[in-house]
Structure formats: structure tokens, C-alpha cells
Length: 386
Image (tube, rainbow, N blue to C red; front, side, top):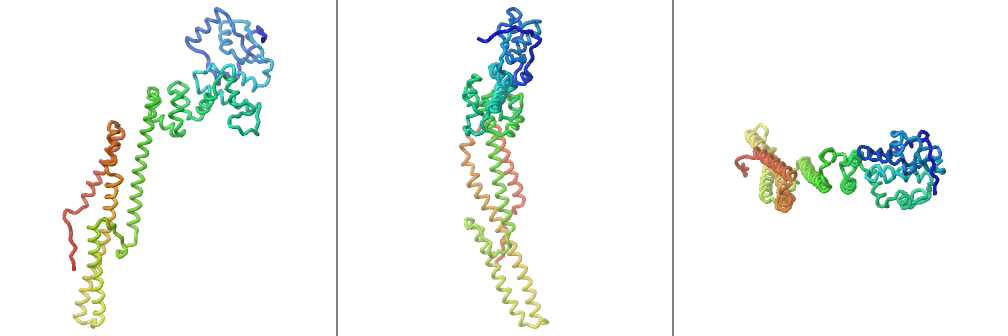
């Protein structure tokens, strides 16, 4: 049995790192604690190092000073000479005091693990559950907790500082933080807290927070999909615009037969004009440049050239619009076909965020249609066949 010694309370010293890891008892709990010591004295001895540094019993020491107690019982641990040994014992004997504060438990465990590694380090061991020469199972036994608790406490140290503070002040349960927030990056955790609000998050359940995160992720995914589709269309349009304007080699989507036939007709007419122009050019060379026939033929050739250029412009325009029509038709009847999303719309009918975003997108499309109608002629222009 360890010897109990009564020493002057004035020679005792508070451990320099006690306040870093442990809070003082406060409020009604402290009043009851102080009253019990006033009535019964200090029953449980303090544990101290040979230099009288307190290892366990800081609250009894605090109450004793306030009540004017002169002598206080202590057990002197003669083997606690090294500062790391003192700190390790401080953690082991007081770990249960912070059972309701997982963040502080996590910090204590991390420090305790370092102490074990520093004091009994073994760099050659590759076992992931090995810390120096002491296993996590041994540490768990020393601290009076399970290895699963150790795993969860270590996870808490990887959360964002804002989230750690919310856990420490009780706004967010540590189980919620691990099961919901830990799946996000540090930056995403911070953004989510800022978005929900630190006050509002206190009143939310883990299920509500998880649903909020899922809705945000689904919305971001939907926006990215739309953005990717838009960028893809923009690239295709730019590629079409930048193609060499050689109308003879332009390819038209054969699924749009009306536009394809129209384009073939225009190209045929253009080729006829070119053939006629070539014949007239050869014929003109046979006439004297000052003859009236030559001048008449030159005028006719100029007219043919103008008609040919006009047809070329129309062919390019039809090709451009044909590509747009095919692309839009593919989207409307394929990826963006409303029937594809009918089931999802029914499931999300009560989700205000989803419906608001969808409504805004529909309004954007309607605005595009309205703007496009301004450029569509009210009558069909026919090309004269020569």
C-alpha cells in the first residue's frame, strides 16, 4: 500500500500544462464539491511528483486553498522524475475527467501517444497499430477506453478548427461530425458551416445536416453537368464556325433531310452557274474586247458571279443553322427529354431548392427561345432556280 503523507498545501505546485487539457469545475458542481471538502476534508490524497508537482488533485488543491486548509494528504510518486513521465501520468490519472469532451480527449490521446513514442520509440516497427514499443491496445488499457474510441478520437483531430470548436462547445455531436462532416474536405466543412450558420446548426439533427449536404452536392453536380453540356456545345459550335469555308466539302447531318435537300439544291445551282460561267469565259476570249458582244457577255458574267456568291453565302448559312437544329434536337429528344426526369420530378416535388433551380433553368430556356424568335423571319425565302 502506498504511503500517504500530510504536507503543507503551500509547497504544492500546479502542473504547468494542466489548464491546457483540463477545465476547472465550475458553477453548482464546484459549489457542491467545495462544500463536501469543507465538511469532510480532503479524503482522497493528491498524487504528486517528488518535486511536489500535482499530478492528480488540482480541484482538491484549488478548494483547499480557498478554504484555508494548511495540511493536505498526498501520495508521492518517487519514480516521476522525468517531465514526460509526469505528463503521461497526468493524462492517465485524469482522462476520465473529460469523458464528456471528446475534443479534449482527442488532444490528450494525441499527446499521450507522442509521449509513448518519444520515451519508448522504436523506428524499426512497421505495425500500423504500434506506437513506439507500446500498442494501441496497451494505451487504451492505460487510459481506460476501447481501441475503437481511440480510432474515433484520432479522427476528430482531422476535422476543421471551426467544426472542432462546435463539437467542444456542444453545438455539434462528435458522432454527427464523424458520420457526416468527416466525409467532406476541410474546406468543404468550413463552407458548410458558414452556409448553414453556427447558430442554426445547433438545432439540426444529424439526418437534417446529412440531407442538406446531399442536396448541396446534388445541386453542384447538376450545375456541373449543365455547365459541361454548355461548354461542349460551345466547343462544337466554335469548331463549326472555324471550319474552312469550302462549301463543296461541307458535311450535313443526313437525319435532317429537309435541310440536306435544300443544301444539295443550292450546291447544284451553284455548280450550274460555275459551269455556265466557265463556258462564257471561254467564249468571251474569242471576241474582240471592243465589240458589243464582248461587253454584253462581260455584264452577264458579272451577274452570274454575283448570283454564285449569293448562293455560297446561303449554303454556309444553311449548314450553320442545320448543325444548330440537329444539336438542339438531339438534346431535347435525348439527354434533356422531360420524360427522362418525370420520375425524379415526382420524387423531388416537395424540394424547394431543386424546384426553384429547375424553374430558373426553364425560364432561361424560354428567354433563349424568345430571343431566337426575334431573328427568325416571318416568311420563308425561296431561292430562284436558274
